[in-house]
Length: 208
Ligand code: PRP
Ligand code: URA
Image 1 (cartoon, helix red, strand yellow):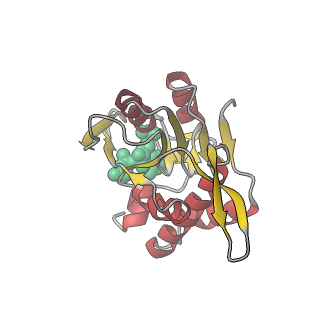
Image 2 (image 1 turned 90 degrees about the vertical axis):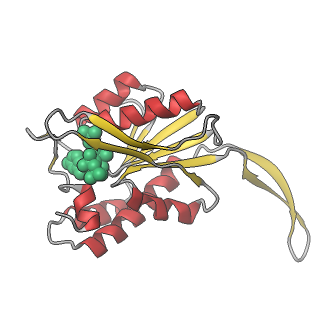
């Protein structure tokens, strides 16, 4: 699958297995979401552009680099929220722009309820953060919003993807790379990923 990066890192595999476990409680679940999000973002940002930067160590001048692009994190409410803290640990100056979407339980189509993006884009690279890429409706809608906003480069960082969600994203937004911890088997009749991890929002916020 072009443009789909399923992590092969042993730490990711180890933590994802604990995350899937139905006995994992919300506190531990949130910790794992944070940690896996950071590990995946480390992999997903390997191609960020740099510019040279001269600095001085206590001993001598040194040539180095700084990030050239302004980065925005775009968590999809609510489940994407739990990924922000982990990613922020790597990029503390990234801006965070929330997009509120929920899936209509009957149609499985995303319904937008929160979007406070200013008129002009303030960042050049956006990482869409959402643990689950199921039908792909929420990710496609968010990418539509960000492209209309004028963002030059977008990446999707999630925890688990279904083949159906990947296909939807690749059809609508073939330019957006998808970084996940795992690609699972399929969706069930209610649009949940199998084997997945259940409802990512409910498991983080203790609302199951
Ligand atoms: C979940 C998940 C994604 C969406 C994925 O959110 O966090 O945003 O479903 O499904 P899709 O790929 O079929 O669009 P949900 O709608 O349950 O809202 P919540 O995060 O507020 O619980
Ligand atoms: N949203 C979730 O939280 N889990 C799924 O498996 C699918 C959508």
